[in-house]
Image (cartoon, rainbow, N blue to C red):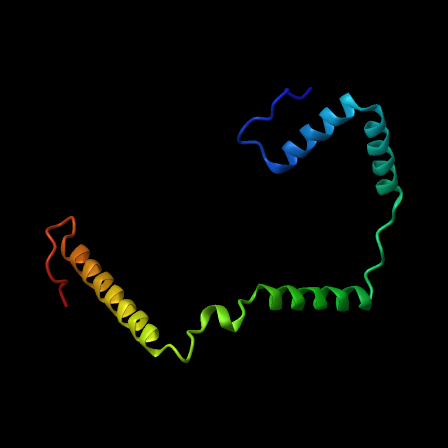
Length: 119
């Protein structure tokens, strides 16, 4: 049914199914545990969606948003190292100027000869 080695571009779920299959073939105890777990999952009923469910969902979403934000120390420059901040600002200004110049030259070298755009 499944090959001995999963295809290299297989999806995560396909790889997991392949691993479960190999485990079930090689271990009868694992196969029985998988069957028991599947039966337990089918027997379980979904919980009713009441106000507590949505409150919990909102709490989980807020927590995930708070955890995904980088802490202030990671992105704010240190206040006492002004020289480093000035060097970063100058480097950023140079990079912006270089990017602006490159965009201008690319716009001037168009497929129809380039030049200034007509007003």
